[in-house]
Length: 176
Ligand code: ZN
Figure 1: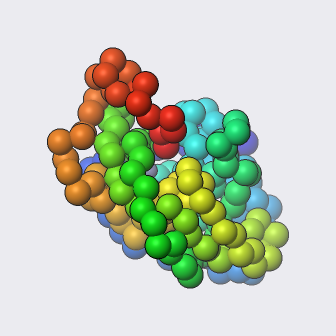
Figure 2: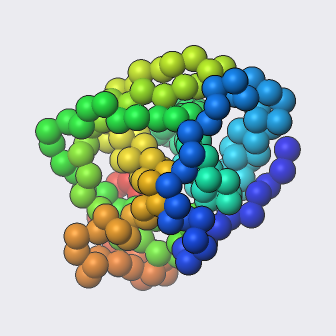
């Protein structure tokens, strides 16, 4: 396994639309190793989600995992599609491994249903709420060349990490 370098905001690959993965390559050793590398990279940099464009690969692949009660199960999404958005919205602080040391509030639907292939190439149908739903939307935005700062409707909440810790961390139960 390997820790892959993270593409940072300003890198054009973060603004490209990702290509779907050919389902026939999913079972290949090379692709399986890439998935393992994505998880290792995500854990190394203490993220809870990572999309392939963030490691300079413009393909529709997302990995996610977060321990804890309001956590996220070990998830691989290949060629994901959101097929339903819930009617209510939630506002959550977001951060991104591609945007160092920044946080900002984003409003998104608080429930989504997503269909995607898993690492065996099997179609999965996931209904996600709360942090999981927000993380899915954040990571899938990367596949569209979008970053959380594009989704902020009020840039006045854009906060450097040090100031976030000093002034805002207490009020927020969860941060992605
Ligand atoms: Zn991100």
